[in-house]
Length: 252
Image 1 (cartoon, rainbow, N blue to C red):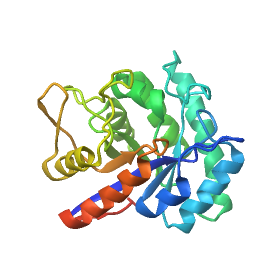
Image 2: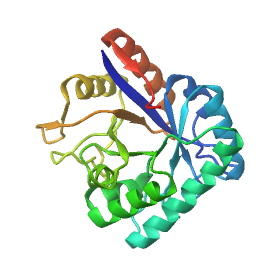
Image 3: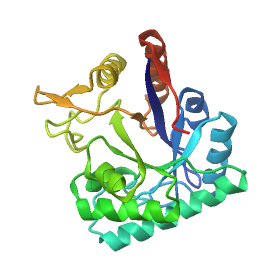
């Protein structure tokens, strides 16, 4: 039987602003990446999202991003590896406190947005992020784009890693995600999303926008919780998994 983790970025509301449908989407996922206050989220939202995830028996991970609330952490910033290390340690620590207060432990760490994408090809940045995760807790799982420098850095330092693929993003022929600045970066139909995901799981391949097949290792699938279609994507994927004999299961 095929098995896959289904993760979603959650806890991205803050103050008076509500983003996403966290409570509705949690029953359909197995791992939650919770914002830690830099690109989104705040202490109250972090606490609430942790409690909701535990109520739904969903595993929890930190979702550290760049300090860019206005840009939702999706604008590239010039930071040093040391700065990357520091902001990742800081954000893991913040979320970990809320998880421990509920008597549970963190499962994973998945960088957010531009920080995630910058680490795909940048070895020095990836190593700094992996070191930050390892030094906080070597039992944590590091999520990264399948085949990326981030996954390789995690493996080198001794972390368990999870190769991540995306249900709602298109791919380039080098295996990277199509930049969000491109008009065809996002997949908007459920049919195309489900078809892409099933093929990645069962065949280990994804069709790039250039028309070539790219090899991918699918261990966890991301749904972006801030998208209006996120809840429908999650429901459709779970239904498709059942019909295709694919089991949804977290890592721990």
